[in-house]
Length: 189
Image (tube, rainbow, N blue to C red):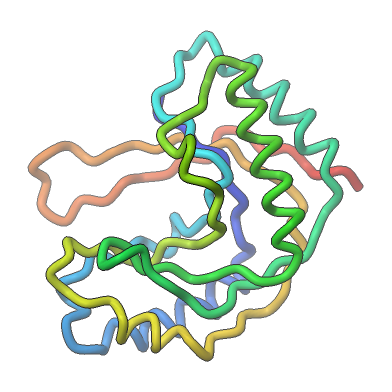
């Protein structure tokens, strides 16, 4: 199964961001982008890729330990950026060092369980929440500028989530991945 580990922002934070995204969708060329669905918004800590079912129990135990070793911390969604003209994202502010440490622990747990390193290995961790994807035909600069003043409410990250990604069938026009939370682990309190 195709898995990743994430932090999910609370609904009130998602609602704030959704208001700004609605504004972005009114910009010229917005229709040429593939916008991610609000229900799937997340901060990926580690993308594990295809993971054998036999590994999932050990992976879960290791993720539980990674969560237990990490105290809750504060984050906020703020501003935005882009990866070339391939992806538009909302940025992260607050205790980014704590988020980075949690991502390192999660990646190590995946590797030790035999579920990693995943496709993100070697790229470095860049905290973000993907909002839209492009094919390079549309410049994302106006959309990044539209996120420039965005400053969402702070929230306390209190858990990490193992998520299964169900890819759409090839050839289905407009189909999006579906995300299914499998397990959650509270951070140390």
